[in-house]
View 1 (tube, helix red, strand yellow):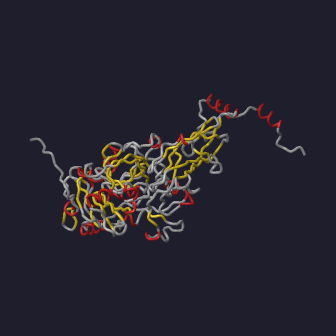
View 2 (spheres, one colour):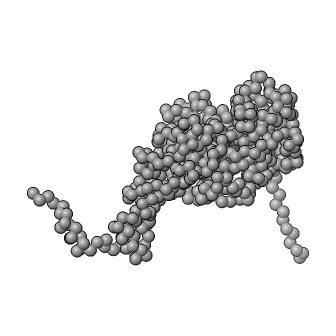
View 3 (tube, rainbow, N blue to C red):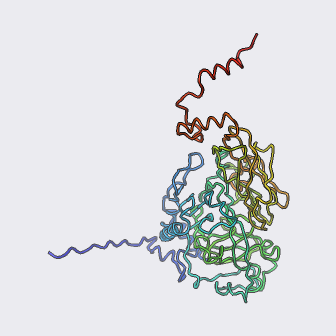
Length: 525
């Protein structure tokens, strides 16, 4: 009997209404992998919505009223993977995670897909410029894989001359003046975990991720100001133009519908201060954009929430009104504290653009036991958007009654559009649980709300209240504390194990009686 033949299992491609998924939702452009055109294909969007309506997907995860998993990734995006797989786009899911593992292995993976990754504390404070591999990521869809030579940027709408331009042309300094800018990008959900902990809010379909203090980062971007491209290549915009819409190559799902990622910024922002507030960037910290950060081209909108800095931008539309895409119209809205599940509408919240002044304590961490000699060192970041810059950072060791200004020499340099890292050594005599907080004043004299409750909003955005941490202070400059530390060390124990009970007597009978007799507990008469 001859050798057994190997069996090859052939999986037939799924179909919908008699057509293969790859025909219904094709990758039409050579050199553009992970990209499907939705915005110019209304019939394709309609078919996708019909197909999605026939499926049942994993429920949206609950993470506000239950403890967060201690895993990394913290949350798994089953539902969003299933959306892509239902349309035959599983390769986008796979490539995206491969890109995370290659470019962002060290981040806290808050959500594996679409990828949300937070910078760890030590990496955040390494330098005022965040290393590319440590810079946070907030994606709304998968990561496209686009060849630079195949890339074209389309600009149309209310312009004098619609164009299609290659990246090589954009990079040509003889055609467009290049600009290098130091820019902090911040997710509007930074520090959201503080709102969740006290007052949970909207569990958005594309989850309002439970970000800590690390959804912020600073990089030096190189590119060309959008205003220059509009003027030189398009002959300017028409008088009716009030907004510029940016469309990204990633696929985005919202309430059973499918889109390309789309957001917008006002024309007044694009032309502000000589037209250098909005950059078309291809370089990040002296290197080509990482794929996960928008390679080959992204928008950088200075001072705005990170969501407006569209990654993988391939089309720009000059419009009379803001983008009607769901990210612009239905998300990143700021509501009053009385708006919630019972009455929220897209129209009764306003669109968040400029980031407010904010700051955070990075070291020490909340609930940390700190052994010191009468002084505690704290560090962190401070930032303000909208073209404001940080002027002063103040830290309080008593919950906000007494404030100490961070010395100017302990702050990194000022930039128009970037954070300042800070460090301060505070005098602390008291022991036990203490509440430390930080607040920042910017160049327009703005400062932060005092408490989380002051700025709570249903969508849990822009947590800009004074950042507060509780520390357990152990002051070894006090004789009794110093002797207690020595006692514990003699038993091989660490005083930082705060809740661990003693297994031996803390005081001999003679010492106790001496103290008791010197200061009796009962009154004399």
